[in-house]
Length: 249
Ligand code: PEP
Image (tube, helix red, strand yellow):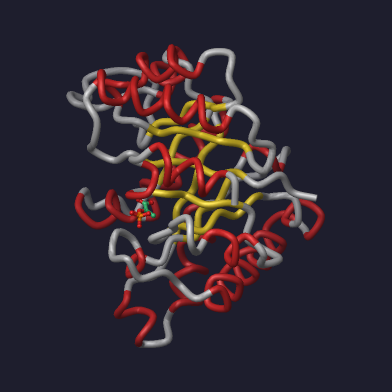
């Protein structure tokens, strides 16, 4: 039995004050929620404020990116140890916006994944096909490449130390959600790939989130699918009510 995990990716939104108010509002609304583990991923500058706002609650902290080196001359980058220091337990790796706008490829993502896993933080490893790739019927090939290269030379000792997020690029921020059948099919395929890497016992325990225009009115049918274990939520995580309703699917 996998415990669902729902994470809010705030992207490049929210000042410190705004983040504090949003986090405090979410904490208040979901304090009785038992349906899922809850994670907030604010911008780096708001990590401290959100850490303070969620202290003692059932809400956990995550970041949106990190560097693969411990420290050094990498202007503008952020080390994993800084994220732990700020109270993060999770970090999003390989989000499609990083792949698309910041040229992150599978090799770079693999370096980050190795480093995050060895640090004790839990990566939320994002994969997903573009619209063109889906139209050309390349979805499975793309997922296979992203999984096999992104997780290359990684041996997962604890299945709870990895979260995978299947996010079809065409569904992110577009208002178009994958149908429950499309999502389930991709999730099952990803779980089979994980089984090929680490055996089915481990694969059956890894949580696989769906991401892409998740809203209060589509979360329930997605969560009802056998291999969907939560959601990575962008736009709808920026408002207290909509995110709380998603959490209480
Ligand atoms: C995301 O940023 O990971 C995401 C899924 O965004 P949205 O929910 O806005 O589509």
